[in-house]
Length: 88
Image (cartoon, rainbow, N blue to C red; front, side, top):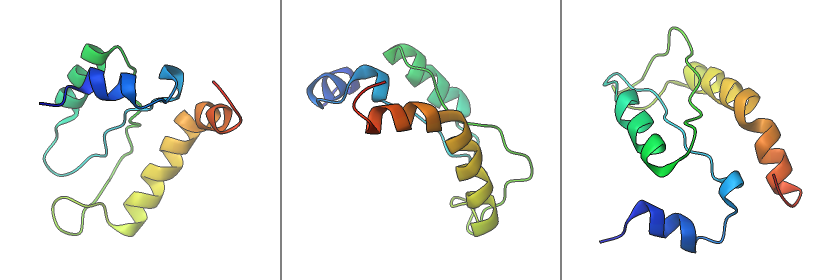
C-alpha cells in the first residue's frame, strides 16, 4: 500500500512547503488529523473558526467555507507565498 511518508518523499515538494490541514465537519475528526500530522512530523494548519455550518452534514456552507478559507490563508499564507516564490 501507499504510505504517507513515501508519498511525501517522492512528491518532489520541499518538506517546508507541505501543508496539512483539516476542514471541520459535523463529525469532528480533528484529533485524528492532529495525530496523523504529528506522526508525519508536520504541523496541522487548521484554524478553529466559531459557528461553522454545513449544508449536508459534511461540506461547509458558502459563508462558513469563506470564513474558514480566510482563517486558513491567514495562518498558512506566508508559507504558501514563500513556497510559490521558490522556497520556504
